[in-house]
Amino acid sequence: MSNGFDQPVMMKIDKIINESDDTKSFMFRHNLDYKPGQFIMVWLPGIDEKPFAVSYYGDDFFGITVLVRGKSTKYMHSMGVGEQLGIRGPFGHGFSITDNIKDGSGNACVIGGGCGMASLTVLIESLQDNNTTILTGATTKTTLLFKNRYKDITIFTDDGSEGSKGYPTDALEDLHKENSYSIIYTCGPEIMMSKVYEFCKKHNIQCEASLERYMKCGIGICGQCVCDGQMVCKDGPVFDSQALGKMSDFGNYSLLKSGQKVSINDYGKWKEA
Ligand SMILES: Cc1cc2nc3c(=O)[nH]c(=O)nc-3n(C[C@H](O)[C@H](O)[C@H](O)COP(=O)(O)OP(=O)(O)OC[C@H]3O[C@@H](n4cnc5c(N)ncnc54)[C@H](O)[C@@H]3O)c2cc1C
Ligand code: FES
Image (cartoon, rainbow, N blue to C red; front, side):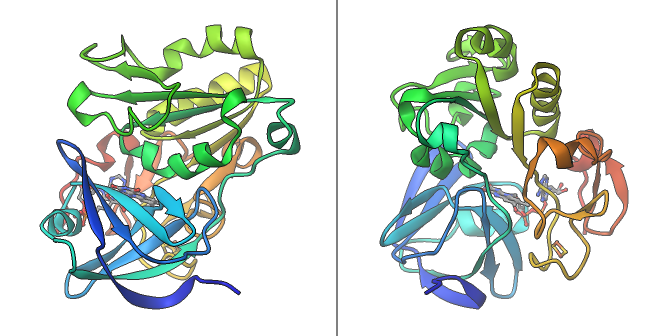
C-alpha cells in the first residue's frame, strides 16, 4: 500500500535541526513511501507550495532540509516544533541503483554541491558504503551540509576554509583513475552538474543528475518546469546521461516563475513579484 499523498496532508513538525548558517531540517513522524531522488511538495497555507527532496528517511520518520531563499523558505525557518505544514507526494523519477552497485562489483561516486546534498543523502544511505566515494562542496565552511553524517566524505570549499580549496569536480580525474567508476550521481548548482556530465561523457561513465526547475503543480500539468520538452517534475527530477545529452537547456537556461527564459547563471539572482 502506498503511503504517498495526492492532496496535501497536514503534518506536525516533530523536530528541527540547525544544519548550517542558512539551512534547517524539519523532521516529521510518518512512514512515507519514498525512493531516493524523488521530491515532495510542501504547502504553506496562504503562502505557497514548494518542492523539496527528502533528506532524512526511516520506517517511521522523514525530514526535509531547507535553505533560506525567498518568501516560503523564510517563513519555514520561522516555524517551530508542533506547527503544521501540508505534504503532497512523493513525486517524480528518482535515482537508479544498478545491479553492479548493489552487488558491490562496481564503484559509484556521489557529488553534491551546496543544498544539493539534501537530494543525495537518502541515496548515499541506500548505496553500499564500501564502494561509494562521497564528494561535497560549499562556498565556505559555515554553509557545508552533513559533513559529520558520513565517515568517509571529501570536502571542498570555494575559499579553502574547510577541506580542499576548489570544487568537487577538481578531484574527479584522479579519483576515477583509482576507482574506475561505473556511475556518478550528482545534485547541486547546474554549472557543477554540467561539468560532471561532460566528465562522464568523456570517460564513458553513466551519469545521473537531479535537476532543479521552478515548479508549481509538481505533477506534469502546468508546464512551469519544462526543460527541452521534458517535465522536470514528472520525467525527472533525476535524468540519466542519455536524457541529459538531449537537453540543450541543461547547464544553460531555466524558466522564471513568469515563464521568461533566462540564463542559468542569472536564474537565482532574479527577484520576482
Ligand atoms: C525537485 C526539487 C527539489 C528541491 N529540493 C530542495 C531541498 O531539498 N532543499 C532546498 O532548500 N531547496 C530545494 N529545492 C528548491 C526549493 O524548492 C526552492 O528553494 C524554493 O522553491 C524557494 O522558495 P521561496 O518561496 O523561498 O523562494 P522564491 O521567492 O520562490 O524565490 C527566491 C529566489 O530563489 C530563486 N529560486 C526559486 N526556486 C528556485 C529553484 N528551484 N532553483 C534555483 N533558484 C530558485 C528565485 O528565482 C528567486 O530569485 C528543490 C527544488 C526542486 C525543483
Ligand atoms: S511543475 Fe507543473 S508541470 Fe512540472
